Image (cartoon, rainbow, N blue to C red; front, side, top):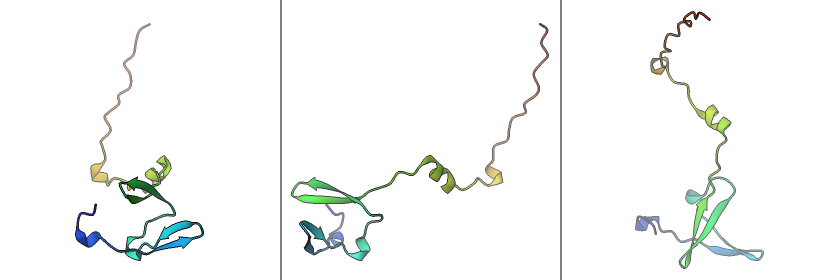
Length: 84
């Protein structure tokens, strides 16, 4: 159900071969090439398919921390000598 009555829009239905299609207004277009459909009561909920990013894509999208946010490395002294 829309949060606001201004979110409600009228869209045209048409036949595309043996399928029924709906014209989605340009300001409501979905990204990508696929959507999911779910029956909700008498209606149908259309949602975009959110592609999961790979670990590599996530790392490449991250911005490096500025130097003032870097952690200081603790001092790592050499091990103490041990008598065997």
